[in-house]
Length: 277
Image (cartoon, rainbow, N blue to C red; front, side):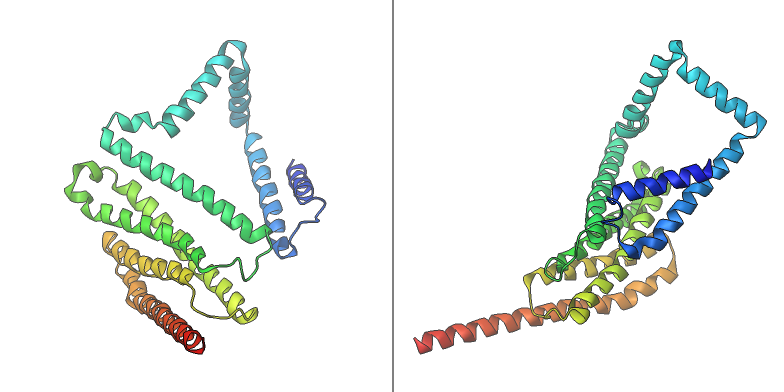
């Protein structure tokens, strides 16, 4: 069964890449690891189902689910659970409208971010990347989760003095740490892409207003990490903003100097044109 699962996944990879025509050879190791891991999970699950108690539970469970008397009830119950439990979160609404609203805003914000980032990462992986399309605003991918981390950290800090948030503290800590880790993960990737753009491909490093889209996320990451360190009382984390602040300030100064230089150059060029005319 495990071999069949691995073979099936390999077949889907071949079909999805149009007979490997659109397959990136750099992903070969990742592909092998995914196929082996998928087969191992199926193998472990198949062994688990061989246990007498588990096999009885598995068979009776599916038998009851497929029963004509219970099929409609089970299907409708699953739909109600999906809509009422995950989408509407009625179980939280019973504990207060404000708490339900906060959960809804956090949940849908996370879902929208993950959907958009999936499309962006898909473009990084499967669409040809050029120096023209790789613009500085890609740093907003990190800045968005940095803003979320800052908001979560501030809520964690005030949670002890606000009854509404006191019960949500574990939830807030988990999601805040998740988004901080996501933002931290983006930094080395974006730095590597920047080195590839300007050093490997020799794209000219000249002032562009789009560079301000890189400066803000750097400052926001510094602030959110500082607040997160205070929120979870983890002093070693303070090492990052202590030095990253200089990186953010240096980036701001570099872009600002580039702005001034661009304005002066444009003014001098305009004056020269007028004088020659």
